Image (cartoon, rainbow, N blue to C red):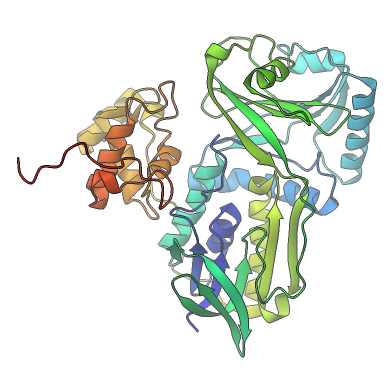
Length: 464
């Protein structure tokens, strides 16, 4: 056998599973089709850590609640930004009041603690800057915000340092059962293994005789990233619950900005998104909007199929809006099952620590000077908007599973996500990437094979 375990898909669940399994004496590989792991995570590097209150499905609620309780310790261990803040699900109409009352009763029957059904007076005591005419709300102290891309990268880095092989730019073509395991065929290789954990959403292969069809209830959420420097901005996650399926959500980010999401049945343009957002943030000004983008809101669309677990095959199908929250819980459950089936022992040499990294912007003046004295590249600011230094960019390229694309650098460091959107620093990032990877600037790509940033040089010289 080439491997004991093959994990298909390098998203946050695939990386979390690889990390958990790397604690044991197993030969593991992760196969990912993209240039980088966690490439499907939203551009807004802030995700809500849910507590299971809003989930309609009991299993998803339990997974959310379990993951919520695990993430604080995991992020602390990996030095990933995480902040536990309160959340309010607010209702302004009689129809929406009935909806949150039903949600609250279901949550209490599931045994979820630290949640309260409160009236308008208590709501404004908790969130005095709320401008909506709220009548009732569910208040939870369980919820948090986390940087999902940082978390996925941390999972991957620690797994890599503990011997997991990451095979990037390989597309899985088929999975077949053989006498003593499985054969996985990619566009580059053929591998044999004892166990396959398939986390690629939506794909079916020869082994999938009973194809699982996900009821895709995904909708588009329009997001505005707002530079809100006012003293009366909201400090809690606030979700305006409508009588129908739509909602408006506002959350503080870990970078000090405000993220507003609008989920609506209507087809909205930019002005329509701003108009809807003003229901929660009346003072919103388009001049303060740093970015606008959209993402899929996948609702109740994930199935963990372990019907063939005794044969060594687990399939995690679909996508879910709380994927970041449930990733630790799913990876733990899968790992326990695999370890029991393979009867393997813990790896005595396992190192449960991520290599140190530095965010120049968040360091004190003394810490900055000490760092610059060790490596003067930390004193050269490449991204003025977010104060990202050359040292950080070089480090993110040289780290385990280091960045090889402009997108990889942007997500790891936050460069180009400022007011100028990279107009000042993009050329410098390309040159640093070219220098560190031994490529020409014209060979550097944005995110994938066919996304070269520079088509060609204006003029080539044989000699200067």
